[in-house]
Structure formats: structure tokens, C-alpha cells
Image (cartoon, rainbow, N blue to C red; front, side):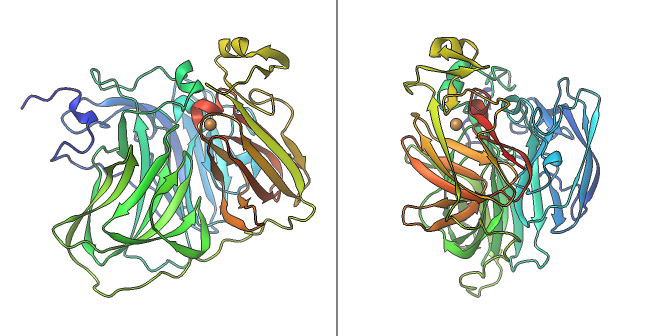
Length: 464
Ligand SMILES: [Cu+2]
């Protein structure tokens, strides 16, 4: 059969591929001597097609899964073998500011051939991830990320624990290589850089073999630059156990669709209800069509007993956001982008009109200011509670990520949402979040749509 180079872009149409499973090189160990960022030829498209040059930790993407036990120390030395500076951010981990890995705010970028020592003790169990945080829109887009899993000290009652990292890649169908036009103005000013090759753990047709009756823990991580995944499950009874690493006090029955914005994670417990010989799916919904994001081939039966709803995961320490009465108010207005109506904003300390701003390949503003400056969005005292109104005055959704601390949404009736580190905000919405400023330092607050983060949607919060 003649295979055109384009065939692999039709996800789910090729059979007989050899699955690539990312290796958990460091399972259960807190010490990783080195984490090497390097270019490599990698089998991203299916076997039989040419390899793709990616940038990855140890030359693979996702990078090695780091898995450790809550309360143990982690340390590693980043070694930069890329041809440009880099750094590593440990997304969602509430660790000390000096270890947060944000080039230009918490550390200098690490030059080619140089290294940087990271060490910290993650306080929380849950599903986190690590990724490059210098020119993230390109470095993450080329593959520099991996899962960072912190196991509970008492393992929950599941038969399997699987990490599913969702991504999309923009592949040139003729060359099989990553489209190099990172930073394209049209992507930046609209919904970001969308890929044409959607993957789970870097496979276009990811599958696992399971048994009927098994209870799986699925740890979903959205590592895509800009794509919001709309997900559902088929052939499972499921519960949402945790968002962004943090356990829910009561598991939520999984019904309908689930949004997963860039940077967000969700932990599901799912019981396989599909009969042997058939498939269950994690499906993504696009334009009212379902696509297999991961296929679960049901081969035989495991436990037949119906376990019922799972007990909640054990709470993490310090999940309180303090008192809302007297909380420090902060307002963040997101502005700009295509069809946004923004006429002028401050860039590099000067008020400019939108044309001048676009000439600098910038498109977005927070409270009239484009990009990171020396002035934080807010200065907070340690253990002060802040309450932030986030107004989406743009024509696009955004995924606001706070470093170093988790927040809860404050609803209109005063009730609180789950603890999260990334808020998905849709066009026209006004939402409120509140958090306890328990962690001193300079914390980035930015849209995790990486095209937006690099074109204006980045600020920071100073906790002293
Ligand atoms: Cu955005």
C-alpha cells in the first residue's frame, strides 16, 4: 500500500502501530542525577514514517515520568544541551520561589552547556508536570515536558495508575517535521497555535489493554500549547477525584463533558464496564464529533464486584484559603487580541496604539499593560487572603495559571470551588478567585495558552 505522508494526520486511521510507552526512569526515587534537555530524532509519527526532530528531556517527549512519595525530597541538575537558554518549571508544586524555574523572574535562564540545581520537597500528593519556562511557546511546543507524580503515602484502592499526557503538534505533512513558525502573529492574536496531530503520550493512536471490572486511575495532563480539550469517557463508570493535583473532598460522578485547558490536570477513577472484546474510550469532542483520544482494549474480566463510589483521596496539607472577609481585592482585566477592541496599551513603559504593539508581535494586555514589567499586579503580605476579579474582555478563552499557590473560585452565592492552579475563563465572563498568599516570593500569573503568555498575557504577584 502506498502511504502518503499525510496519512498519519488522520488520527485513528492507521492500524498495527507499535505503541511507545514513556519510560518511568526514576520511579519511586527522589533523586535524579541529571535532567538533560536536548534535541533528538524521535518517533513521533507512526512507525514507518521518518523520525521528527524534537526538543525533549533525554530526547524523548513526554520526558521521563518522575514519580515520588509525598514528603520526600527531590533533587536534580538540569543540563542544557539545547542551542538556546532554558529552565524548568515544576507546574503546580507549592515549593520555594527560588526553585520555581521561571527564567527572568526567579532565576536566570541556563545557557547552553550550563547546568542548574533544583531541589525541593513537594508538600502535596497529586498529578503535576514539569516543563521548560524560557520561550515556553516554542520549547514546550517542541516537546520539553514530562509528568511529575507525587504518590499518596497510602496508595488508594485502584488496579492501575496511568498517566495520559495530551498534546497537539503542528507537523508539516510533507517533511514530517515540526512547523517552525512559532510566534506567528495570527496564532498569537487569535486562539494560539493549534496542532494538526493530536496525541496521547506522543502517540496518535494511543491504546492500553485493560480488563472488565478494573478500576483505573487516569491522570490527565494537558501539555498542549493552546488547545482546550473537551473530553468524555465511553464504557466506564467514572469519578473526578482531583483537579490540578488537589483532591476533591467528595468525588464527583463523571457525567457529560470535561474541559481541560492548557496546563490543567484532572485525576479520574474509572471502572471498566465494557464487555471483553470491545473497546472503551477516552474521547475528545470537536465540532460535535467524538474522536478516540485513548483506546482501552478490553481483554478478559478482572474483579466482577461493583465497588461503588470511591472514597475521596486524602487531603493535602494547607488547603484553606483563609477568610474572605477583609480579603485584599485585586482586579485583572484581560484585553486585546483579534476582535478585542483594544486601542492602546503600555508596552515597555510607553503608551502605544494597537498597530505599534502589533509591530512588536504583542497583542494582549492586563489592566492596560502588555507583558511582564518590574511592577507586580499586586503586593501581598504573607498569609494575606486575596480575592481577585478576573474579567475576560476579549473574544477568546484564556487559561490563567498562578504559580506557587492554588486558588479557589468564589461563586456568586459565596460558595467556593475546588482548589486549582489554572482557571479556564471564557470570552465575556467575570469570575472571582481567592487564595492564601502563604508562599513568599515572586510568582508568575499568566495565561497558559503559551502563544498568549508570550504576546502580553503575563504578570506577577509579589508575596513578602
Ligand atoms: Cu490566553
